[in-house]
Image (cartoon, rainbow, N blue to C red; front, side, top):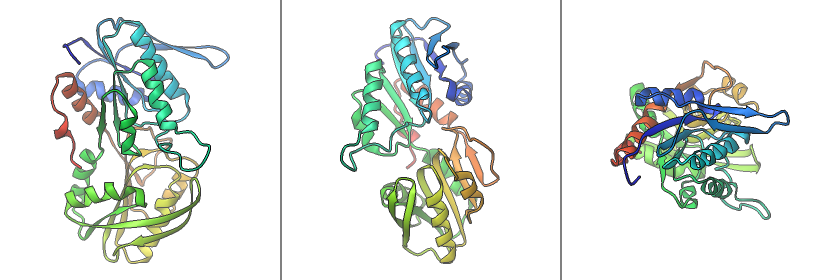
Length: 312
């Protein structure tokens, strides 16, 4: 951002609950916008106040349905056409991030397509949290502020005062994240090796490392069907673990996820409000990311370093 410009916040329909928290933490009002819906399902967002010459922050997580990502694209386009000075897409959950490469023939790279669509719409900057794959940042030709939920998870883990703490990676892809947590917490780490027969279905799991008499904390970027963490927690408890807790940034929680968690031996599942819960659960604890995003937005707007906002 080259010059200091007026600042305005807006929200897509799916993330109004979070946008309200962010703007309250920031100390401003959420801008007025509306969406006109046509009988065939088409919709048209519009801003109900001037954004000319403003730095516009549009808050929208892009979880299913795909209307959410398309609504964000339309809002970015509308802001640019209304002569906004620049437009920042605040996407706490970046949908389609699991499609970050061609893992088999004749498939799309969905994450790259989404970044291209955002660029085509005219976005000037993107803020997101715990991407499924870090390399997605390189798909963009605009600045990306990649925030980590560790800034709220680590203090919570410390507050539990767990003895014999062990950090666990739910799969080989999560070893980097788990290693960062374990180094910061100065504790051991274990790795779960899983063999998938197809998407959302785990055929076999093995645990590499010692879990007996340990309090296990599994860290991941998201929970989808919760089959993996349910199987892992059961295996760890059978091997003598004292407790198993799961910390995952994005509560996708599709299909049988809630039932799997309720019927599992997991003590607690800690998530953020990047995606709203479909229903309440005694085992699921939600930590808000509103203050984290408000702080980063404030620093970016005032040309300050955001490196202090990262813990792990």
